[in-house]
Length: 148
Image 1 (cartoon, rainbow, N blue to C red):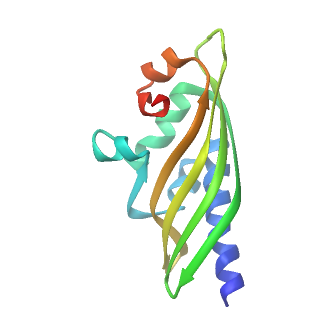
Image 2: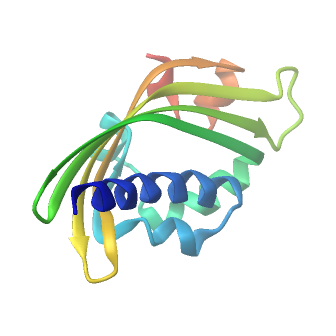
C-alpha cells in the first residue's frame, strides 16, 4: 500500500536524524544500503568520508547535534523511491570557540530501494543552502564546501 511505503520511507529519514543526534552508529548504518553514496556534492566526488566514518567524524568534532527534518516529498515506483526533505542541523563544537554553534540548513535528495529489511537509502545528496558559525572552524574541519 502506497501510504504504508511512504510512512516507512519517512521513518528512515527520521531514524537517520535520531541516529546522528543520539550518536548511534548501528541505527545510522541501518538507514543505508551497503553500497550507498552519501554526502555533499563536491566532497563525495573527491575525498568524501565513507558511511562508517560519518559517526566518528561527527562525534570527534561536536559534543551535541540536533537535526530537524521536515517537508517530506516522496515518490514511489514499485521497489524504488525518491524523497526530498528539508533540514536544519545544529551542531555544538566540542572545541571551545567564541561561537559554539555551527548551524546549517538545506535539503536532502534521496534515492531509496526496498530491501528484505525494508526501505533503505541508496543515495543521499546533501544540498546545503545556508550556514552560520565560526568560518575558520568549519574550514579546519574540512567542510569548506559549505561556505561556498
